[in-house]
Image (cartoon, rainbow, N blue to C red; front, side, top):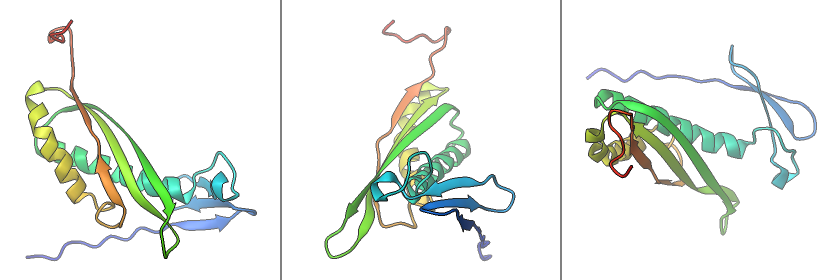
Amino acid sequence: MADAPIYFYQTEIDWQGDKNLKLTSGKLPAIAAGAPPEFKGREGVWAPEHLFVAALNSCYMLTLLAIAEFSKIAVVSFSSSAQGKLEKVAGSTYQVTEIVVKPRVVLASANDLARMPRVFEKAKENCFVSNSIRSTIKIEPEVFHHQTQTTPCPLS
């Protein structure tokens, strides 16, 4: 069996004074970041806490989309919110102990609705971010069938 490829991702951070940072990575657009207000930072910038939760949320979404495509499940729309719980852990320091991801998926075919619980599970199992962190991860999905004028909701 051939070895799996190894990838490297590099970021740069420049301190902008106070608790303000500028994140860059090659040709990607710069991101203003810094400490959140709870830790004497300011509003309006991405904090490490936001980026951590966003990393999981975006990885989960992209993994789910790849699994759906492989499984020939047509996704019409997909949005997701995620909330991380940062708390001081006894005998330690602050940690993100839990992240709740709430994906909201609309499918083209009602026939695929029954397949989605396994897709959600496989996405969690295969998301490299969820496999790289200690936080408890909870998935609370909502799945809908896309209603069109030719396939109206039977409750209408």
